[in-house]
Structures are given as structure tokens and as C-alpha cells.
Length: 354
Image (cartoon, rainbow, N blue to C red; front, side, top):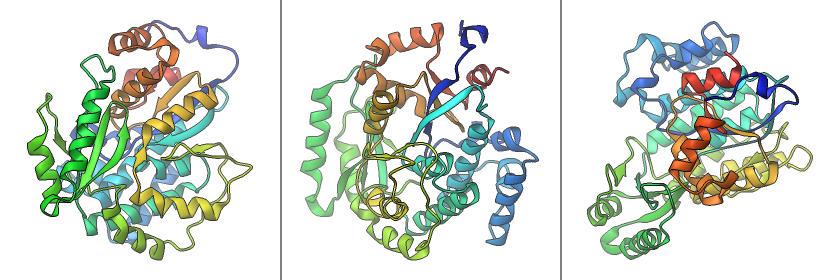
């Protein structure tokens, strides 16, 4: 990263904030929250909220309880941990240097975006994330498989994508199999389904490196299989305190929710309705973010940095700043980093001027 702090002096930088979802807090991230937020008043409130529900506190999960994927990867623990880590990074941004022009997220990251963008209070966001993580964990309906449709240089391969979609359509309904598009994730597709469907899909897909990859402790998010969870969520959170955001939000369809036009009831209805049972198009959200808000940089809060690759793939598909492949993206990052993953210490320190 050759750009110095001096070259960034002047007007506030325009940031598109992209909040990560499930699967980003793993063994390498254990201790992340303590490093970013130890002693914070809001973390003490989060811990109290968890304690009141008879759950291990986030501070304990992040520091006292050794990492175990079977424990830390559960929806009722993983989702609040990720939410808290992301908010710690968002709160570290300097409003005198950084202007957040819009906020979006991937899957569970939509809940984080609601709070980061001001449509929910920080504590109300944790209550939403905790409730949804618990409902998903208790129901555990189906699962997800991740598979790429780009080449090794992250260039799109439309024929590979077409074959993948055709396979999903062919297997769906065969001997009880259920398969659906779950998340459009840059150059990858997340497929949700029941066990019969996912088993058939994995067996039919040609191996590409570590793919097809079954995502650990993930239900079939953003598919019709989540209809029972949707109904329970709407009953559990009938009066969730949604408001108008402070900055524009971009949802999983690419729709913009502005501070001056958002109807809070409609935002509640989408979040606890369509968002749960319809495909989440992260790529569309990113496309709208860069085209409509022209950010100087795209910032992904922690924990982890796994969303960085998918984001870069989506930017390559858009030809953002002339990107045409992985090598071009890496060259841009080395010369003037435009995609910042705050889960990487060097990138976080560079952004914050540390």
C-alpha cells in the first residue's frame, strides 16, 4: 500500500460500507472483539442483554471460552459475535475524515447494516440479530452449498453459471430434493436446499479446488424453506423499533432505502418477510452502491476478510475503475487500495491512520 496519509488529506473520503454475514468469525478471529472493544459501554450492555437471556456473554465467547466451531458457529452465538465485531469497526471510523455515503451487507450483514445506517439503535440491532440467530438455530431448516462460476482470474464464465443453474433446476423436485438460489455472491452462487437436494447437488458438481463447499451450521437462508422462521420472527418481533436510516441503505434486491423516503413499517416488513425467503442478491446491492453513490473506497468491517474476495469478483464484473481480473485488482490494491477489509490489521490501520 504505497499511498500515504498525506495524499488522502482534504475532503472527507466517501465510503460504501459493506457489512459481512455468517461464516466470518472463525478460530483466527477469536479475541477480535476484545481487541477492538474491550471496556466499551456498548459492549457491557450487549453482555448484560445476553446474560439476561441466560446466554454466554460475547466477551466470554470471545475471550474466556476457547474457540470451538460447534459452539461459536451456532447461529445464536455466531450472529451476535459478528454483529458486535462489525459495529466495533464501524464505530472506529472518524466522521471528520470519512463520510459513509451508503450501507449494505451480505445476508446477516443486512441486520448489521440496519444499525450501522441508523434505522435501528445499536442495542436494538443486537436484539434483532440475537432473535434471528436463535430462531434459525432452533429450526435449522436445510443448508447451503457454495460454488464458483468464475475462472482462476475471477473473470465471469457465463457458460459455467448457466450449467450450474440448469443443474439446480433439474435436481429440484427429484425424489424429494429441494434446491434454490440463496445468495448471489460475486463470482459464486450460494445454493440453499434440503438434505436430499444438497447431497445430489454436491455429487453432481465437478470439483473446483475446495468447492463445492458445504457451509457449516448454515440453514437454507433466503429460500422458501425459511417460511416457518419468517412467521416466528414476525410474531417474536411485531413492534421492532425500525426507523428511517441516517444514511441510505441498500437491501438484498438492490433497492435503496433513503432517510427522506423510508417507511419504517415497510422496512420491517421486508426485513422480516421477503428478505428471509427470497434470494439475496449481494452482487446487485454492490452494483447499486458503486454506481449510485460513487464511493472513493469500499470498506468491509470485520471480523475476518472472507467477503473481500466475493466483493472483488463483483467489482470485476462491473468493470469498476477498469478492473478486468484478479491480477488487475491486486495491482490496484498495491498501488492505491480501494477495497478495505478492516478485519486485516494492516488495512484497518491504513484506513484509520494508525
